[in-house]
Image 1 (spheres, rainbow, N blue to C red):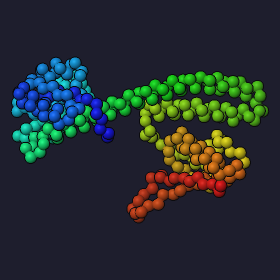
Image 2 (cartoon, one colour; image 1 turned 120 degrees about the horizontal axis):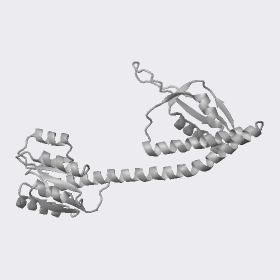
Image 3 (cartoon, rainbow, N blue to C red; image 1 turned 90 degrees about the vertical axis):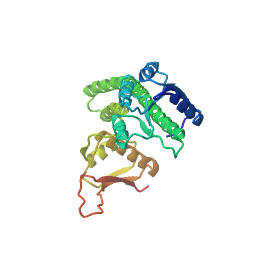
Image 4 (tube, one colour; image 1 turned 135 degrees about the vertical axis):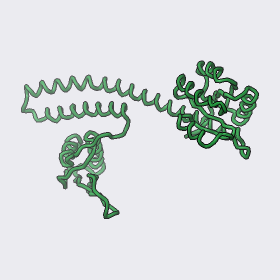
Amino acid sequence: MATTHSPIAVLLVGRERDAAERVAAALERTDDRLDVDPAAEPDEALDRIAGGRYDCVVAAARPDGTTPSLHDRVRAREADLPFVVYADGSEDVGSAREALSAGVSDYVRRDPRTDDAAVLAHRVATAVESTRAIREAERRRERLERFVEVVSHDLRNPLSVAQGRLELARTEHDDDEHLEPAADAVDRSLALIGDLLALAREGTAVADVDRIALADAVEASWTSVETADARLVVETDGEIRGDPGRVRQLLENLLGNAVRHGGDDVTVTVGIVEPMYTSTRAESHGGAGFYVADDG
């Protein structure tokens, strides 16, 4: 994760104001990005958080056990605001484990052998940068989804008109050999738009896979590619497992590349690649792959 030089506003909640001011000054000297405001009491801290100006809360671990309560109250107001606990070293390991399990961003234990301010400043900056990166990724995903929805809508309308016209033409001229491929191309375009929208909404992971007859998928993809005088040879009647829409896109790309780079009269061959197991105990889970080769 890249380090940024954007200012980082920190609210430091100490056990007492003098101690909080000393730690705040040390943090600002250590990292000039940090702008640290000290607060002595949890209620004061919560009032300040309500303003929405802080990027992180640093809370000193309190012997009265109120730090977890402060964390819960902060999270209730700002669910993703980084919260770092700064302990003086008297707490046991269990306290750190409990705090991290409760959802604090980090737990820094004071160590007289190290530069505490440098360690704490680094942890604060890391927590803030991680949160900013997550927020930016969410914003980009939302922008992408809005963009795809608009584009999908704008593309679907003319394609739907073309689809309706083709259906009408087929009823009047059912012997025209060009209408069926044109209708298939329109249907395929509409399916791709749907896949694009789903991809923008759900990401790249494939949740469900189906058994796919490779020969049928290859032949269907071949009809969507400009093949000129190229020849297709399918050397299998086997099956693969995958998402049908994405397999279709992959095959169209591979077949199209083979024709473009192999020449108009290239022969393109598709077959199954069986997995090779390095252990006699390995079992097949339908993991066969396939190859696309050409003689160009």
